[in-house]
Image: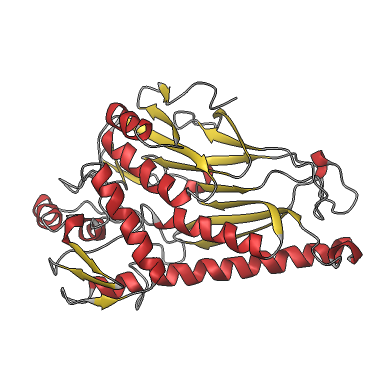
Length: 363
């Protein structure tokens, strides 16, 4: 079995490789202060490039003290990430989603945040004609795309056709009934899985949290869900004059990790969904993790990846839209993106052809 690299490799942040300094550094030298952790079933990285000195405290700090301040803010941001994961993940016992799925069709009172994400998921179910469906949970449970180095477990489970047929019979976002903060599944066997939209929502929330702590230049990378907060600052204590971040879009056909191109980003979000980001191979056949809601098997629309680009604050929508487009295919996916204001997309098909909603999206 061959396992693809995690989604972190889908989008590469292009930054200089010179050593990092803080006060007095030039733009090319500022690599920021970065921390990486494993959250949301993927590798996540937050990098701070600039903070606003709201009370004069930062200007008085030494380089080392300033770095510690940035690390503290990032650590606290990852705590926020964990809080949302504990709210929205179907695999976390006691989460809002776990309680809904375990309620046997009875109403469950959940948080405003959970209601908001589920409503967005329903919207993309409607927009995609059901190709994107957050009630895919029972079908995803049957597949195993996870390796575990500690236990020696190798993913690679191919469910039976009978089991998948039974699972998809309960997939229908219209089974979700919302009344205020109460959610009820009209089919008790339906299961919600927010994996196709929650990372984007959390990425938006982390950018908001960083901003509340005085960060004005940062990159939030939740395994391919990129949010650029501001532009790239020349100094950790920001004095203005930010340049655009440069986000490289990975070529899914390239074995060497080369790029299709670079997207300039300032207060933007870039989200990629790809059939190559998580998969296993058996008997010469690749099985990826994005499932067809009608069959329960991996979608086959001759699309390798879809990258969606929009203004900051739209990462949840970009997340849902990129997954929906991958399930719809190039023609229908392009039509969907073009029907929505403020969104651009780049499609790469299995032949390596690149189709974009407009020219000059990439350098």
